[in-house]
Length: 288
Ligand code: NDP
Image (cartoon, rainbow, N blue to C red):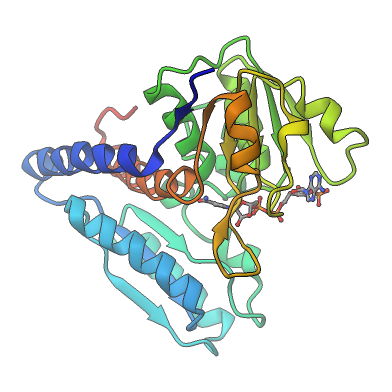
């Protein structure tokens, strides 16, 4: 069976070109670019890298992306004041607080303080609620990026049996809701699922968001499956590996994402998309 590699890195480049053109058009129309404030608290090396990539991609597309870096011992009240200020700032359409936050910070109080109209991560209860109801909303970037990846590769979703392994608020749950909104029949699995293999072997579309290297093997899939590997794990040699045993699963799948270069780049591309969407919302322009 010929297997398509779902190349998220390449698609993200295409999207960046499209977004750059879109941003230029918006500047012509409204006299300002969309703005995204990525807030970094502390010096965590992985977070610094992620934040750097997010800001770089924004700037490449022409999006206003100020550096907001706060020291690791910043008190809760100071971060909250910063969020309030960004909520009021007319140059800022999107606010993202990089996780994890230092241990003295109550994360949810920070995330829920962000204006839902600027919540480009889609974590605010208002946006989660809109997603559940089936309204247009700012939905979390990783699962939204996966839907874009499937669409751009022409892989149909409606009527397919999608199995999502993982039920986090960042990936698993919104993924299941987005697939459901596209008329898939959805099963959600988690650490207490009795017969994981039995469930995953029924999948036409299998999304692995577990956080355990190579948890999904050839014994978990049926021939022809479309496999989306969200996992980002470090193996013993420090190499980035997915939740799926790519070598074993590849020959059985009709399409599969690599790690790295699959879902990861689509997450950042979708962050830019959500920022543009938030801008259109604020400026009263039609938005997808
Ligand atoms: P969480 O740890 O929040 O969730 C993991 C989920 O997997 C939980 O629902 C858990 O079940 C389930 N799980 C754990 N072990 C098993 C098992 N043995 N069998 C079945 N289910 C299991 O992780 P995230 O959702 O935040 O992230 C998942 C992975 O995706 C990580 O590797 C993360 O790094 C990566 N990631 C990648 C992104 C990207 O852009 N590529 C973005 C975000 C995350 P339970 O609820 O019962 O505990």
